[in-house]
Amino acid sequence: MTQIELQNISKAFGSMTVINDLSLEIEDAEFLTLLGPSGCGKTTILRIIGGFEQPDRGRVLFEGKDITNLPAYQRPVNTLFQSYSLFPHLNVYDNVAFGLKIQGLKDNEIRPRVEEMLRLVNLSGYEKRSVDRLSGGQQQRIAMARALINRPEVLLLDEPFGALDLKLRKDMQIEMKRIQQQLGITFIFVTHDQEEALTLSDRIIVLNEGIIQQIGSPTDIYNEPINAYVADFIGESNILEGVMHADYDVTFSGRRFTCVDFDFYPDEAVDVVIRPEDVTIVSPEKGMLEGVVLSCLFMGVHYELQIRVGQELYLVHTTIPRKIDQHVGIVIAPDDIHIMRKGEVEGDEDI
Ligand code: ATP
Image 1 (tube, rainbow, N blue to C red):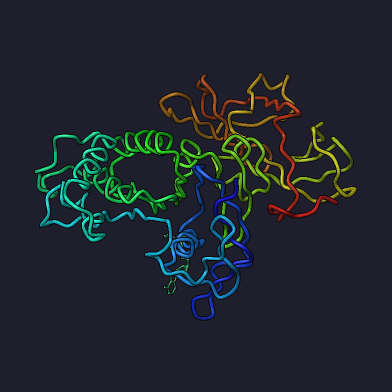
Image 2: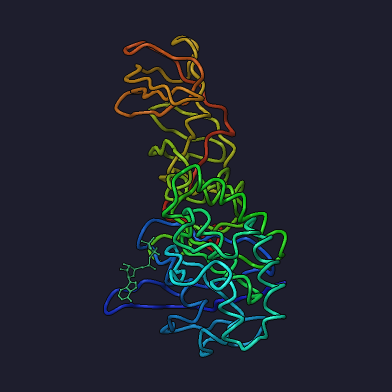
C-alpha cells in the first residue's frame, strides 16, 4: 500500500533549483534508500518528508491525506540524524525516555517502553550509563531507540553511520535491517554509499541534481542500470562510446558485437556499459579484442587489471594475475554488453 506520496515537488534555494518536479510513491514498511552524490538533493527530499522544509511547488501526501502544510511535530515521522544529538547530561534511560516524558506519560507507562526499546537495540542493562561513556556504535543505537520510542510510522535516516568506522558501520547496517524488519515500519534512508544502499534496501532511488535517474530493487539497479550515470555510480563500469546499427548489432572499441538489446534508432549513438567482472581474458588469438596489460593490482578477492585496447582503457576483474605489458585477448558475452540510450532517465517513454 502507498504510504507516502510526493507529487511534483520542486524546491530552490535562491536561484539554485535543488529538486525539479519530483514525484515518488513510498510503500508501507519498505526500506527505501535515496542514493546519490553529495549535493544531489537527498537531504532536502528527506527534510520535505519530515516537514522541516517546505516545497516551492507540489504536495506531500500521507496515506492519501495532504500533509504539505502540517508542521514536523504533527507528522507520524521521526528522524535519525548523523549527529546523534543525545543529551550529554542525561543517562541512557532518560535519553530514551525523553520523547515520552514531554508527552506527559507517567513513569509506569514509560519504563516498560524504554526497556522494550533497549532490548530492541541490544543495550538492556545500560539504563544508568552516562551517554558520554558509550562507544560511537552504542550512541547510535541509543539515538535509534530514542527515535523509535514514539512509535513513528516512518523513520527518516540521514547518513546515520557517517561517523562510524567501516567495521562498526557494517555491524550497524545489519542491526538496522533487523530492527526495521522486526518493527515493520517504513525506513527512508539517505546515503552516498552505493554498497550500503545495495545491502540494505528493498528499493533504491538514484538521484542526480534533484532528478530521479532510476528507481528499482538493488538487483535491478545493479544488473539493469538505465543510463551510464547509474551504471557508473553503482559499482565500477567500463563506459564506452558505441553505435547501435540495428537490433542486437553494436559497434564499440572498433569492432562489431552481438548484444541482446533492441529498439534503437538506426545507427544511434549509445553508451555501452560493461562490468569489470564480465570481461573474460583469453589468449590474444582467441579474443574478440586484443589489448595490453597496463597494471595488475591485488584487491583481496580478485585482481584489478587495466588493459589498453586501442585508445581505450578497460577495467577488468579476474582471479588470475597477469604481467605488465602482456598481450591478452578479451571476450565479452552478448548479455554482458549493456546498451544505454544517452541521457535516458526513469519514466522516459520507449521509442
Ligand atoms: P550531502 O550528501 O552532501 O548531504 P545531499 O544530496 O543531501 O548532499 P542536500 O543537502 O539536499 O544534498 O543539498 C542540495 C543542494 O542544496 C546543495 O547544493 C546545498 O548546498 C543546497 N542547500 C541545502 N539546504 C540549503 C539551504 N537551507 N540554503 C541554501 N542552500 C541549501
